Length: 211
Image 1 (cartoon, rainbow, N blue to C red):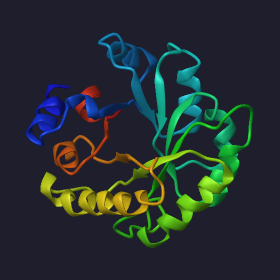
Image 2 (spheres, one colour; image 1 turned 90 degrees about the vertical axis):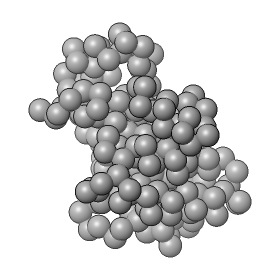
Image 3 (tube, rainbow, N blue to C red; image 1 turned 60 degrees about the horizontal axis):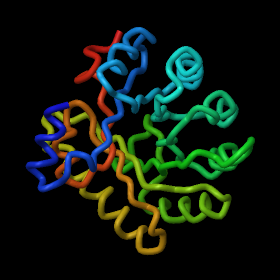
């Protein structure tokens, strides 16, 4: 996306330092293939059954990101095809994720920065403890993820993105692998990039309105 490259350059960053995850939830395999054929390889899903079904029908070099709330009893559906799990918010999910053949795919810790009851995520105060516990289980925790409140304008998201970056920096002193920041969507990814996002999750700007 040209807008992503432009936002990165405006922030003094290499556009290659930002991974764009095309969020393909509700989109058909044919629609995903249309974006794939343009050269895109990172796609995101938020429902286990939908990810499993698409992964079985689409090219194996797609890097699938699971970006939604995941129930422990659905882990078996997606663990084998997931490149990065964005949404670990509790130790019990980490315990389920570590089970199974081979090394578990790396994870991000989801943080609820605004205290929104309808959203998943650990609190900022408990994030460090959760990272410690997940690492002790044998998981590779690569960073943090957040979904701020829906903004009326992009700048409304900046305080949340800045807070997640500060939290990552603080926790990263004890965990050097904690480098990723998954934050920013269609309406505010430019602000997220300026605040250090390494992964943005974009659906509508790539696929159009959800069906």
